[in-house]
Length: 314
Image (cartoon, rainbow, N blue to C red):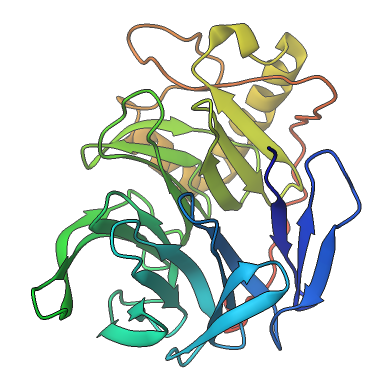
């Protein structure tokens, strides 16, 4: 049985599509402002939405909200659900992370980061990672004692090698990966972390990476400011065509020469970076751009940026 594809929009609506159809099965006004994030529980199918209206909502089916989570003082940017105990996690432009249970805030982590918290991703039954405009990742462990009291503690803070905002991350689980994440943001490429260290940077000819996600087959997909989705794979049989590789590399090299910050960033990581033109090898076992029939992976970026709810780049 096929699932649904959900989208959230600036028109305050959530839409649900069947794969392969351009017409929504369901369409409804979900919030009073932009719907900024969506999360679907892989175990229960529960949909969690976040919005610039400072709330998150819980949906048991596409047309029925069963809870409205109120506790943030600014836009909600990320949401997730911990699988073991059903605790919900939200983060926002107020620098706050909140853990919720049965619709009630159980833990408020004020100033969890020094700037807006843009995303949260579940690592295991009791841990999650947060990403922020402060260019940092933080690993958190959640505990519930015998009396039902919820607590959360930061286990580790990871610095990224540039000062760009971090917008999105995805925990990599396919293929037996452990403590591996893909992270994207402003002027960063897709940074692949393993055991707390950057193991690879997937260069993309776009300024901003809005969303990073691991696909069921282990590929990494990145939705970017050039209006395209870039897909990277470890499978050499799906490597992109030569013209796409040449076009991509040409743009990236031009960008290195004109963007001093980006050049320094790449130089700093030269020992770890695997350029997209490098063939897959035992040395890197890295992801490469892959080509799909009908997919346009052109290298020209529109370099678009939009202000977010709080006047920062998005």
